Image 1 (cartoon, rainbow, N blue to C red):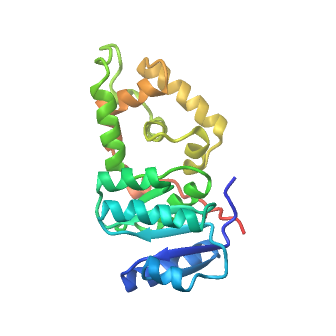
Image 2: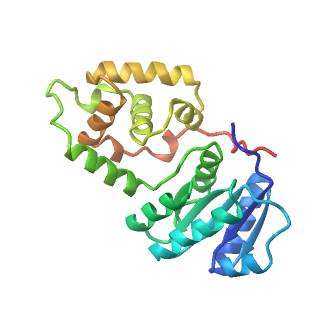
Length: 236
C-alpha cells in the first residue's frame, strides 16, 4: 500500500523547472509541494509540514549527491528521497542509492512517467533509469554461461507476454507489473508461467537473461498499443 502523501519538497536551482514541478505534482497528487533553490535555503526556512517525498537535483556532482542525500536523510528519516539528474551518471546513481535514495530520475522524463515512478517509490519500490538496468544486466549476463540453444525466439510470445517479460526483467514484482498494466496479480502469475514454458526457462532470472539476449528490452510499442492507466492512487 502506498504511504500517504500529504507534503513534498522539491530542491531545484532552475527556477522554471522547480516551479513547474511544484505545480504539476501538486495538481497530480493533491498534496502540498514546497520548492527550494538549494539545501541551504531549505535549512534556513524549512516548511512546517513534514514531507513524505523529496525530489532533489544535485546536477552531476557525485560527492554532492551522496552528501546531500545523507543530509536529507538525517532531517527527514522517514521520507522517500528521489535524485533528479539532467544526464545519467552511473557513479552518481550508485553513490545516491548507497546514501539512501529511493530513486534516480532524469529531468527529461515526461510528466506521466514521473508521476507513475513516484507512485512506485511511495509503494516502497526503487526506481532507476533504463541505462542503469542495462549496465547491471550486462554485467550479470557476462558472468553467466551461454543460454541453451533450445530457447525459442521472441516471436513465440504474445504482446502482453512481452510486456510482462520486460517488467520482470526490470526487477518488477508481480504486484507492480499488475498495477502497471491494469490486470490482476493472478493474471500476471499465469503469464509468467506461460512465458517460462514457452522459452524453456527455469526461473525469472533465466527469463531475464533470455530477454536480454534476444533484445526484448529494446522492443517498443506505439502509443496506441499502450493501456489507459488509471490516475495515480496517491493517498491522503
